[in-house]
Image (cartoon, rainbow, N blue to C red):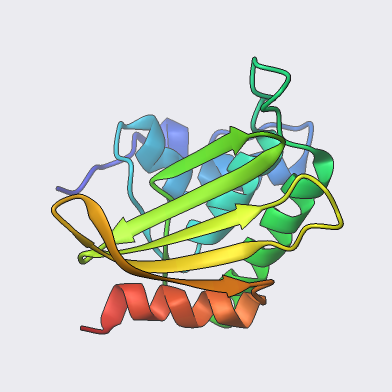
Length: 160
């Protein structure tokens, strides 16, 4: 399904910041405004990083993500977006016990990135096959780099 944007929406400008203007012009944002939840393309991870920056704290104070968790998540996502030409938007972004958990799923495969709320804890990246809505043979990579994420994103999108 292809969604056309109204001309006025494509050229709406917010004078308060160039960042807001760029976000309003993004295909990812426009698709989300039209009820589409998945974006595949070079800007998908930048959009996910922007969503994390702007995400309101969880209403449960015990779950609200820390600034450290947000920084780790956006650094890894933006680095991955630069390292790989194609990526997919996350299917969920959750705050849990001050951490951020980001999940992607496509082609019977899934990725889960955990970004810790505390600096002494390393992030983790889980790769898994998904069968009957259950994870099969998950693999965990401790302290992943943006390049590790890019390889995992490529695995999810293109390999068998």
